[in-house]
Image (cartoon, rainbow, N blue to C red; front, side, top):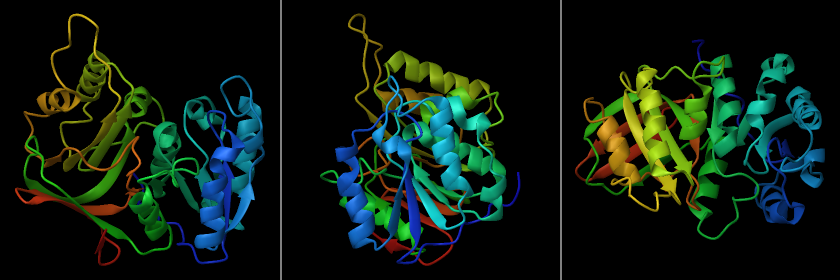
Length: 311
């Protein structure tokens, strides 16, 4: 695994790109986000062609989504790319993206959910990225702290997070690179060139709208693939709108399922962390070194490039 490189932090007046590399987006849904970036963050916004197109459930054909994102990756004047939304589609295009010009002029890539595939690819290439709210979700009610956390990371004012304790937590501390994202994507990436090496890392996971038995299956897959056995720490984010069988019930909650599968290990574990498909989806700088401390008073997480500011 190469040394992780941190793209240049943003400054007011920098140019960013907004694209929809996965599912289709209603353009009006991202106008408040574009306004935030332009008017409050003082950034110049370049809008991708995929923001106003659609092809079945996707924002465009694979070829057009590749071309739109590739143009942003190749343009050295664009200092960050923020996805409009997730959904589904990044896995269809990830192996056809060319990062040659990106490597010559690295930039921040921002997204979560389906964007986990792209963030994981960047980590494999040795570049940090940001798991964070996207243009569609960043201005929703309750997202104020999440939005500020993304702004802080992009502008080099790295945030620290303080979280309430949870009965399922396992105390301990760790300093390590932080990796992760959507659990479904992480499980599906196993065996591909984009799978992440979790050994010695702080892993964070989250998911949405899955059956509990499928969550159990994904945790088993991660465990069988060796992705859970040698972690420095585990951050369990939000598992939103999970579904149970009508009858009989699976019999455990999402957090109980995860707790069971990591019970044999001794690394620190934090449950109910504000990351995932919720309004308060705090930004995580994937690939950066982070400090995680889980104790009876609560949980602290901060990134190790500057003194943290608790928000």
